[in-house]
Length: 124
Image 1 (cartoon, rainbow, N blue to C red):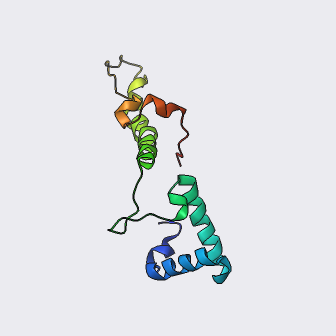
Image 2: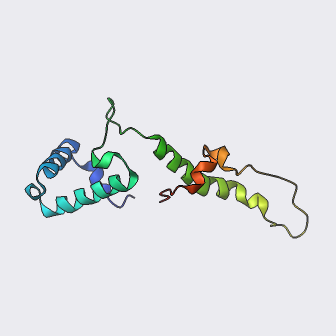
């Protein structure tokens, strides 16, 4: 269950109207909404998503930048790559030797480059 599941039933148009009102004049909305929108803007700022402006496509979905795709690839590398393939590097059976298996955990396999090693990614 989502921590904020009550938001899934919210009227999107009403929330958008409140947000536009908040951007024009923060004191024009209730203090609880001010805190909510401050967190919203903070999250967008940390992720570099257009400074909280929420650039939308014609279908109403937020456009994903190349940087965000790299962030997702880093999460996939950490969460899935090492979790599903990393055990092949361990010795888990003391009775017999492990068959030779070399899973490809290189960063190129996850859409990343050597230049990305110097960058800081928001990994959750």
